[in-house]
Length: 617
Image (tube, rainbow, N blue to C red; front, side):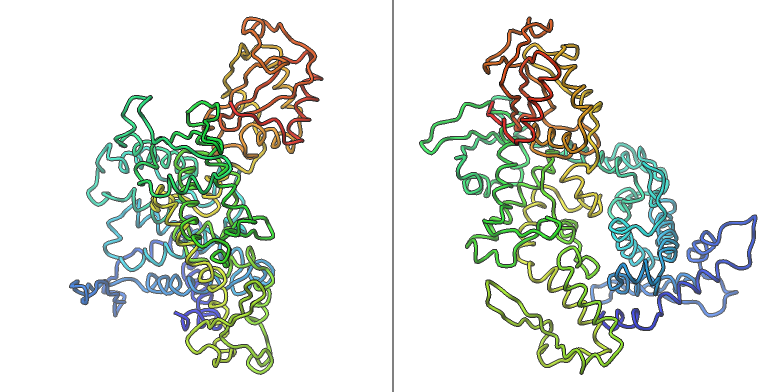
């Protein structure tokens, strides 16, 4: 592996092979014929013919596992593309953004765009359009899809493909969403026998060709189908759910004790939370999903608190496991797994969390191994140092005096960690520096937090299967967890709002509220959303997916209920000093029947900017 990585980087073999393939496909020019990209794809999919001379033979199968070798004759273009895909998997992670976007060496953004476009269309043909071809070229689809996944993640992080019109993507290809759903959920059998399983293959290996909104819909359909099949969910409402008592001062600990050992089936079902005081007295509260939402948010907040020592934050304030978490908590791995289960439950229920994971850590939820191109998000100084090593023009061994050892600092105690057996005695040279760069990044991104990451990922996957999460890329998964990083659509929120206490869409105070919200700037709108839902970002794909739905309830100036009839007719408005309050567990705004829009604006802004006003329903 390391030899291929070093050869791919140092010899320019892969970029030159790709340039050769493009030149072969570009001639002879035929203005009225298919594009060069189409001709290249057709050449790769074309079976070998005797006129071409000696065939290129690829083997598949494993005699060690009782499978006979199968011989597959393929075109020269397919063989070259296969070599490009295999080598580029090791080359691409080593390339930093400066090499691609500034030096354009060994690949420029247009080179990567052309490679991504060709491989994307090729994989789409093999997996969706004509799956029968895959049986003739079984060696081609696996490396193609592996490289495509890397290209897609890199383009999501730092785009190199042309920016398409809003609402579209350069990665989309024709896949009938209806057919996809029918085949995935078994509503209809494929018309062609060779098409059996193609929907699952596309979603598992090249999901980005399907629109993101459609994949979110598929994810929610998978969750809904599984929920409907849970035995306890069919019981009457008053008998449904696992009931838990939680002390508010010990949210994480009590939650771990009572929910940590719960089976995955029970955790996926309804959980009813009752908060109790230190004396064991129950708080006044409504036992519905809203109280569980509050528990979920507060328990995760307690787990990620940096003072607890389980998690750290990057310079961008994104979370990743602390390498020294074991010194802070004796049972740290169990707490990591439990925190993962809570995050998985939030994903399962569609609850938006104000929890931003570091990209390299979020990628582990998709079963991906973090590589050096993700190191800047964690340790930009180390990444810069490795780039110096990689590009050093002088005598690497004698000038830099490095060995295959990584120094680790834990609470002031420095220890040396060997990156490979006997690493302390192996000097870094011009020939092995690419291996050194890979191993340093691998240690920092993966091995240093391996146990913590495995525990957290196992917790998430116990609720949401890996196959479901792989419908998304890393950035898309972040959107699924955190909601949309977009301006709040007040009109959309208004369309999906419910009212109580006598308020309705036409009540003067309600109309004043929507006018005030529309006039606020984006920062204050985000503060308002955080005030009422505990998260400043809107839910993914709009407020119709907010659970529970947003509600505005009328309250009197003294905190009691305003008579419904008065509120309904716009009466009972008064000059009160009472501030709006919110129950984030129910996404509920308790709004006094203010005398004027001016007063409403002043009171609302004071409440949301002060971060005050929460009260339990």
